[in-house]
Image (cartoon, rainbow, N blue to C red; front, side, top):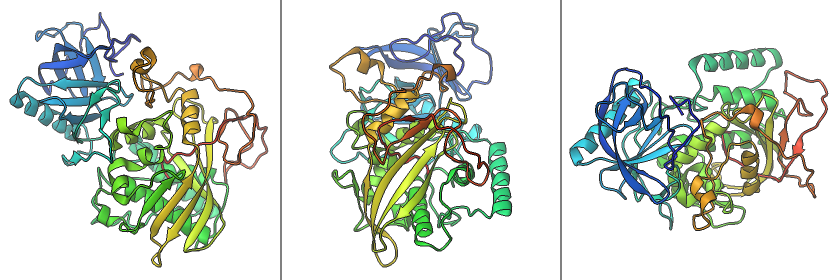
Length: 467
């Protein structure tokens, strides 16, 4: 967490530094707020100061050169109607505070300050909108220890202009240059995402930039599908579909699906409609079957995108492996791969799965059936210290046993990552491989040397990170 030099945390999950002295800088706003904290959810009153993106809590309004009680760097603000004049602020690492103002005037002051913070720090400010509840569930604040009910939320802003979440302009420029070199030297083809450049598209936050992900795709793909082939067309269709459901806020602008007929089945579970995808997002939709590891009722579209998007800083690439049948019912195998944050560039998580598409005469998706083992994917993230259970889940058997994806300080210690080296009892064709050293996979078009495979085989998962 930003500004914390101590590893201690209190019962609210916030960083505690008893002897730290605040550093003076421009103050956006300040005032008294109630903080919900503790295992039994007691409320404490603190004087909060917002400076830039840093929110700090003190015990006194005369806070200059005084030790602070709580501090986090704000990346997400959501409104809770469970508590009057309440809102939830979250950091990139997953830590969150549930706060309430004393009156409507103070509440409006803080909301305006957070919105102004997004603009002044170069963040894309999304329009204020109510996030509808998904079918048969009550939204829940997972970052606030998984117990604060959020009946309705307002998504204020999210600090991302590109994919992945924290990519700099320099990194994007370097990725574009590397892509241009690959195109010029080996004739690689960049994936096509239809309507990405359409000026009329209503984006959730802003037009996404896929340069980093496309570079990862070109460097790591195992198949060179010929442009115009069925494999190439299906690959681009799914990449466009992912872009639309993840970034287009207006479902009527989704060109890849027949919204009236569309149904998405995940491991033969209850089908999801296009409206479900719009409100839930891809992560909560495709992890809905991982009930032992992940509770979609305690998540929101914005939180899941923030959490899983930050797990793979350079993206989670996707390719079609083989197509087994032609339209209108297309079945194909696919591969996902990426490098989790906080690990070396040779630690790769590789996933495989199978999907069946029902297409209409316009090549729009009417039905989608995807098969994978989501629980195992979350187990892989747990082993990489990217998926951890909350304190409440560990402290009491009365609490729900869902897991949330976050780490204590935003960057796991590379030396602390421990991998399970036990061989699996059976081999599954959809088994994920965590490669912990130079391995048998090839960096396509760049590295062609043979390497020793000492990777670790685990249970097989699926994840819809970025395609």
